[in-house]
Length: 328
Ligand SMILES: Nc1ncnc2c1ncn2[C@@H]1O[C@H](COP(=O)(O)OP(=O)(O)OP(=O)(O)O)[C@@H](O)[C@H]1O
Ligand SMILES: [Mg+2]
Image (cartoon, rainbow, N blue to C red; front, top):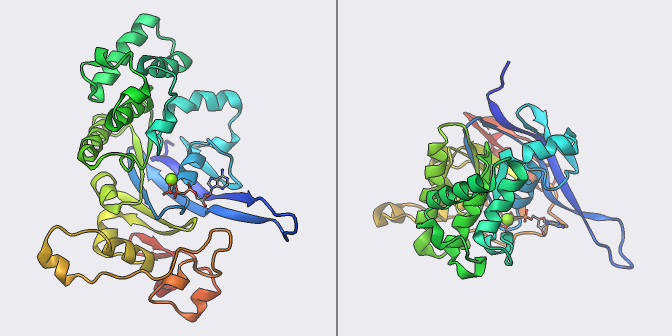
């Protein structure tokens, strides 16, 4: 039977060992991704939101097996990608692509745009040089670098930030991936071009007509709202809430999500006045020595005694999962 899940992540963990000083005690770990599970349907969209250092990029890199997990599994097309051998993984690679957080760093500064794209096409297709050239022109056109001939011979530093991101997007879609992860796709860009890039990403998704599964990573839930049906909220390596984006924004359940949502600017001053902004207190704690119990408890306005010692599991509230004792 064919599964309708594109992606199924089970108890995924990535612990990075922290280098020890000469006199240091036992080995410590940064628990960048700590026991995360979720599914995304075929053609579905998932946003991953959380503050800097919460583990979003690490989670994405695990999902694409760009790094090996400490434990857990990622099923893509019903196969655990961590069990694939080199050959199988190489066949899967073109189908899972990522638009990286820093467009400048992800493009080779010594390669021209046409070489950057040709490299991917040569590696994973059997197209002739002529066909590759044609394909590059149509890819550039598709991502709004028009006329494409103008961009073929340019090096990354000869492009604007928005144009560079368009090149990254064209590379990510060059092989018609079935899973596309966009990691902070607009945060490095000037505000004036953000809207255009978001529109481009949405157009690409819509044109795929349900063939492409999208994951969008951002610290900005307003951006996620414009792109993703479901949202996973991360806090210090853990998933704190998972559910429909609109529902999460309407009525956030986890206290951390409440803080996150209350910080979204509201265009309408009338309703803005009515809404209470929840202040967040205290610095985000260190990932090396996270607080015991619920990681959020030192900053939580609703903290209870058990939050300081026990880790909440997931409680289901309607269609949502939330990791907080308020919903036990
Ligand atoms: N290769 C690595 N070795 C050691 N620690 C790492 C490594 N990669 C990430 N980390 C740590 O894991 C934690 C999560 O990092 P990650 O980049 O996943 O966060 P993020 O949510 O993407 O943050 P940002 O919003 O700033 O991009 C951080 O504390 C980071 O320092
Ligand atoms: Mg990141």
